[in-house]
Amino acid sequence: MLRILAETYPDAHCELDFGNPLELLVATILSAQCTDKRVNLVTPVLFAKYRSAADYAGADRAELEEIIRSTGFFRAKANSIIGMAQVVCERYGGEVPGKLKDLVTLPGVGRKTANVVLGNAFDVPGITVDTHFQRLTRRFGWTTETDPVKIEHAVGELIPKSQWTMMSHYLIWHGRRICHARRPACGACPLASLCPSYGEGPTDPAQAAKLVRPGPFS
Image (cartoon, rainbow, N blue to C red; front, side, top):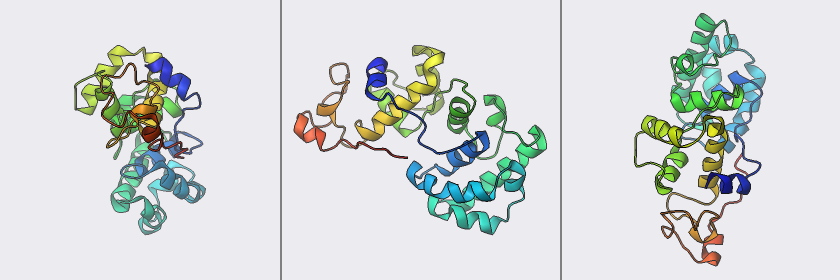
């Protein structure tokens, strides 16, 4: 299944725009309950104004909130970004740490966010268990777990560590484009013959084709 997904999505990548680990960390915090497309509309202004952890740590809260307002939950996200940056400055010399155990100690950073940063900014294998990943791994029969951490560990035992980051991209891309939450496009799915959940959505190719969202989502 993973090989087919790799062939289907040869250009799969993180759909958040970033230039360094700090930018990706901020963008990932902003992406909570928000589309990557919306985040990518906001971050050019944000990244131009705040270029270092120290800039975020000393940010005027009202100005930061106004810039990120359209991503939703902007007050909580501003708290996380400022708090994260303060800790990065205090404990890590202003540089985003490259280890999971350190990243998850930062305000607003859980395992999902940490694994996004590790896999895409530091080239350290990580499994990103977002809503798409959770849905697809259960539909595929890879796990019956519902807790994100348990899903991460269960799938990590099935897939070689070197493939974790790209596997995450493949599943997220497939979840956004074909294997939707409400009506998966089963009749247009390259995994149809292997998927134990085939039939949850329309199996007629013409009907299924109408449900496919080609993207890009960045």
